[in-house]
Image (cartoon, rainbow, N blue to C red; front, side, top):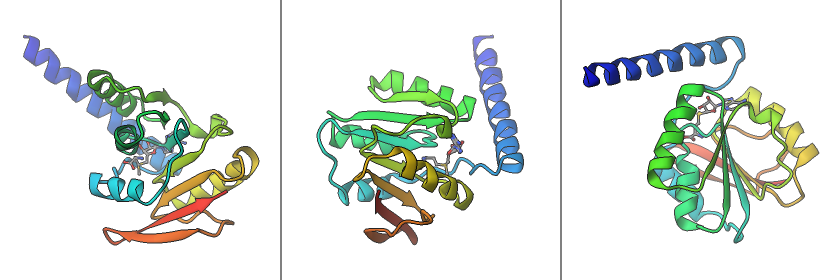
Length: 175
Ligand SMILES: C[S@@+](CC[C@H](N)C(=O)[O-])C[C@H]1O[C@@H](n2cnc3c(N)ncnc32)[C@H](O)[C@@H]1O
């Protein structure tokens, strides 16, 4: 009986995930959940310097793998992940709790969160979202904030460097 309830719960969570993702992608032009692989995340982290106690954001964090790897390498940083899909947020929240992680996971639209404290921002999103984010970064971020975008350019900014990782470009910007 307990097993059946558990299976039913997992099916419901997946159903909610697929329906809300379909809605977001089709009607809001939001990027779907496609995770960055661990090897790429580690390569990205090796390519940057993160100051101690810096605030690091992952916009549309999914399973928050980028933040989890930053937490291992830079345990004193403040880590904030934002995810819009409720089921994904819930699963990640449970996972982080079980691991004893100090990552702050927030459910909601990252366009509604002020990024003025960010020292580093990681994005793996889409072209439309990066175009909107460019304006937001210009208005809110301090000069010197590092922005890393996998696969998609940040229109209106020149990357400091571009590194190919697993056949995809990763763009490193400084606002
Ligand atoms: C391509 S996935 C990347 C996931 C994760 N950052 C990674 O690299 O593994 C993009 C994620 O952003 C989320 N997302 C898209 N638009 C968002 C928004 N406006 N606010 C919060 N999350 C958003 C999606 O639900 C999805 O989980």
